[in-house]
Structure formats: structure tokens, C-alpha cells
Image (cartoon, rainbow, N blue to C red; front, side, top):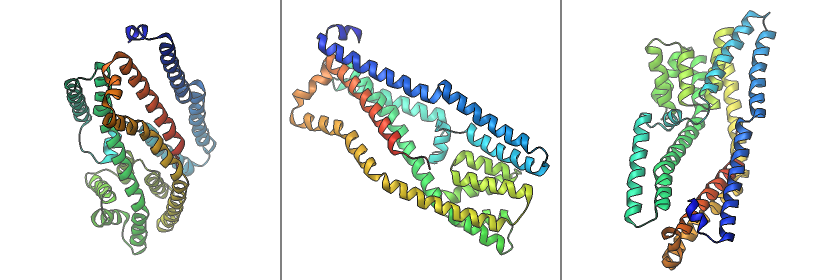
Length: 328
């Protein structure tokens, strides 16, 4: 790549180097914001704040026990936080091992690279296309499927809590209410509650199977349900009324989320249009003037410009995605 840069005109080489430096600076800034000293201090302060709350309540053994239970639930959430590959496969409902997924991605990447070389594309262009298609596309599909499954689970969860509330008020135990949800409701919520029932049959207690359910489906709604059950088992009280209040809160949360998504729809549509424009222009030029666009794929300068363009496109898409996604 450095040999190709040395053969370029001085003006073009300066522009390419400036773009690469700008991308490097932007990446360094993003890494500093996420993993820098300020972020580490905030995480340590948050951890110390949780421990201080527990120490301040040392005079109340029952409340201390509740705090310990809440800390355990939140610790499970923090340990599994982030879209790690194994958790994302579980959220998407894809029942494959991580090594199988990685092997399939590697095989797809090699096939795409070979096909691109047979089409007489340059090595850099073929490698870029192979990486994007072989690694990026499966990851994108898994992410979309996981997001869709989580959204469907969230939309059904308030109805599931209502089933539990009506069952408890009619005299059924909590385990039987969970069994009814797994038997009567559609997937994915039916499948998750069936796994909870099967875990109890294998000898796990309710808190353990709920912790595993939160790992498989890390939604705020399921964490709230798990926390409510943990508190009720420690302190007692009317579980039906507590769950009824939780159902109302979750429905209000869903209404607020839908309202925010409606307000962000215009920005999301703009991001989709701007992100798709480079591919639309390349496709149109390939159909109307293939010789004009072909130099990008057959020359060293064209390959460098494609790499730089691909990097800037990915950076822009990530920035726009961060701007239009709201954590609710």
C-alpha cells in the first residue's frame, strides 16, 4: 500500500493520508470515550456506590439481604452486558455453537474472495468485499434477528405478567402460572418460559432459572420481573398487586419507547438514504458507464480509494447509528 501511495500524485497522496489520519484520530477519540480514564473512573464510582449503599443498610438484616439479592441480579446483567457473540446468538434464537458460526463465516469469506478474484478484481478490493460479505453480513443478520426477537418478547411480556397476576389471584401457585405461559403463549416468550419450567423440574430454584433467562434474553422487562420475584421471596407481600403495578409500568414504558421511535423516524430515514447513496451511485455507474467506474477495481489508486471510501462509509454509518439510537 505504501508503494502505491508513493506512485500517486502529490496532491492525491496528501488527501489519502489526511483521510487516513482523520479516521485514526476519530477512532482514538471513540476508544478514549469508551475505555479512557474518565470512563474507568465512572465505572469504579458506580461500583463503589453500590457497595456503599449496602454498607449503610447494615443495621437492617432483611433489607441488606434484599440489597444483596439485587446486587446479584445486577451483577449477572453486568457480566453478560454487551452484544457478545454467544449471547447474541442466544438472543436471536440461533441454536449453533460459536465455533460453528465462526467456521461458517470463514468459509463464506474464502468463497467470496475466490469469486471476486475470478471476476478479475484487485486483491485489496476482493479482500474488502470478502470481509464485508463474509463477516459483516452474517453479523448484521444475527443482530437484526436478535433485535426483532427481543422486540417481540417485550411486546408480549406485559400480557404474560397479566396471566401471572390473574393466576395468583385465582389461587394458583407462581410455578403453575409460569407453566401456563409457556404452554399457552406464542414464541419467543412461550419458549423462554418453557425453559424456566424445565429448569425448575431439573432442580434449580426460581431465582437461578430467572437469572439464566435474563442471560438468554437480557431485556429490562425480564430483569424487572426477576427483581420483583427476588424481593417478594425475601420480604413477602402481595405478589399479585406488585406484578400488576409492574405491568402498568412496562406498558407506560412501551408507550414512551414507541413515542421516541416515532420522533426519531425522520432522522432514521435520512440516515438510511445517506448511507445507501454510495452503493446506489456505484450500481448506477456500473450499469451506465462500466469503463468509467471500473478503474476503481482494476488499478492500485482505485483500490486505495475504495478502501478509504469503505472506511469512511463504515465510520459515518456507525456515527449516524449512535445518533439515532436511544437507550430506553
